[in-house]
Image 1: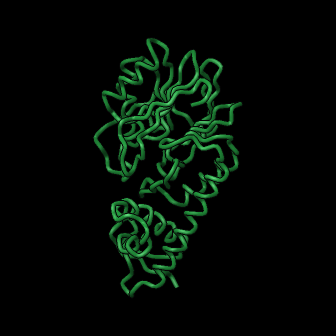
Image 2 (image 1 turned 60 degrees about the vertical axis):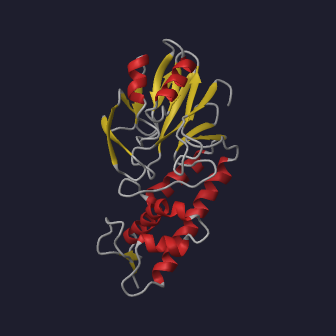
Image 3 (image 1 turned 180 degrees about the vertical axis):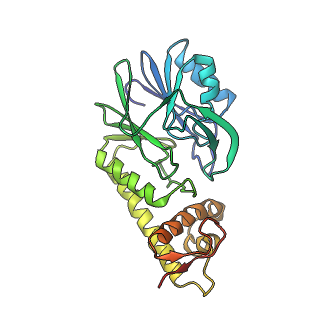
Length: 281
């Protein structure tokens, strides 16, 4: 994929994961792995074949969703590599919808925003980028301009923001933060490497602003009782396949909660995805 960087794609393609989760292996002595992926036997075998015996020093986790983190448990057992991420020290791994999958990951090292991890000649900077998940990190390889973005951005699709752990306002701030870092390339958690990060991030920001305007307009023209996120998806996502509508309602809910926090929309129960919303006039 790039000098001293190998990508292995996990066998978990789908609506939420695209071609599958990207696992990256970089460096030489020791090796560093970013996002081990789902707990899958064949993926574990592919990783072990790639890293060899005694060469893997670190397993870095961008966030603890089930398509990115669970294999860290068995990979640590097989290789002795240390697991690092934002934390907390022991965290339940969940799906992008926030549902607990009854799996827990313990970190050997916690990485805060700006922390650097050194492995041989590599220096990798942790960049805290919450929004998709509160414990989401991107990893910037010092001196290379290469940013591993996890699920902050992905190739070929937008990212689902699922409350309550997902937060649309915070997610937009994280996009702006990465835009200011001006990386030269982005290696995403799903899809192909992106060679024009500024255009990608600007496109994401523009898309989210457009969606917010659509949500606000639809809520403004809603009947007296308001509209739910599901109803808003039906109104707004007319050109999107119906298969994606159940996923899209999470991001619409996240937009609604942002508008609610700003005093522009209201709901009797903003913590309920099925509750209706009305405009604050």
